[in-house]
Image (cartoon, rainbow, N blue to C red):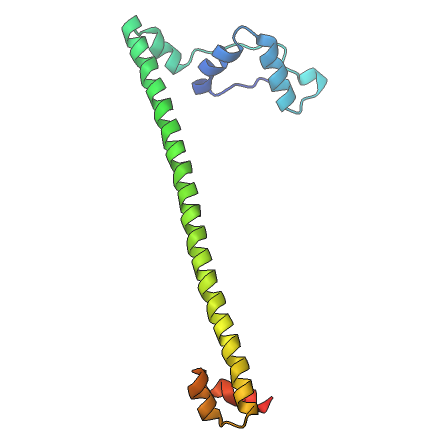
Length: 150
């Protein structure tokens, strides 16, 4: 017979969830593991955990304080998760806005460059020199010379 043990720190939690429903725990563990028919868990036993031993020594007031502390920890974690999620959403929004602005700027610059290139081609066709076209369109002389060679 193979014996397997749960983490002692988690036993108390399992006991709270499955303590009154031992068949559910057996079914869960047997389902999660790939066991042969003869290896299936037939019964379980809970070992006392350190936490359980510590809690059993608490007075009622200490136990309420202990529970209240863990409730506050849970609330704090939830609030932190909510803040993290909100921060992520705000960051994504700002990133999208900046990306849109950069895209618009790039699009305007490319559109201006394309329009200037078309103007440069027309001016070259009219017989203006590459230097004159470069001054008129504010395009680099190299681009104008490449246009005049095509």
